[in-house]
Length: 201
Image 1 (cartoon, rainbow, N blue to C red):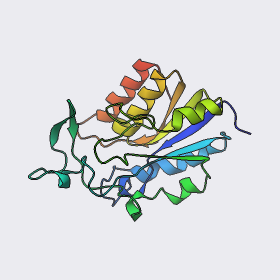
Image 2 (image 1 turned 30 degrees about the vertical axis):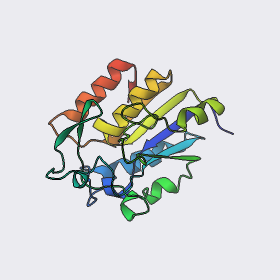
Image 3 (image 1 turned 135 degrees about the vertical axis):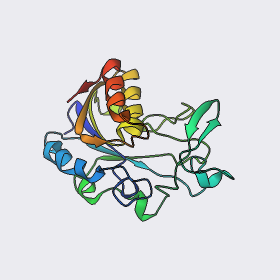
């Protein structure tokens, strides 16, 4: 039986953990807090970055570019990343403790090589949508608690899109860590989510 609320866990994958291709500082520290609240949810959903090896968000796909360079991409400025979460590699695998929670749905995103996809709901240009919103509507889920990686990118965009779609959203901040390319980026992202209507706890 699935209640009207769900725990949505964003991109808790090896390449974002310590030692991964796109390491998020202290990333593994989010797992115990998430496990401590998981029992409160009858519905757990995970997302999974799932890039082809030639994805255009990789610096390696652009001659002369380095990771974290900025480019203009389809009319907006975007960041180039190290190759990460390549389909069917170890780095793309979800943390085993998260898989052990038996998520009822795993949403793969970023599979189109021509567009990046931070959010659990849409790609960065809103040209395509994932199956998530349709699935949530079918299950009559209207409340989301969101945690995962990274606070200032995939978590933030998932939260903002969820709010724009009318979901009630709580951000479990102990279960989030950020890339923090600039100092304070995670705190700024949490404030942005709060202003947009999310509850931060």
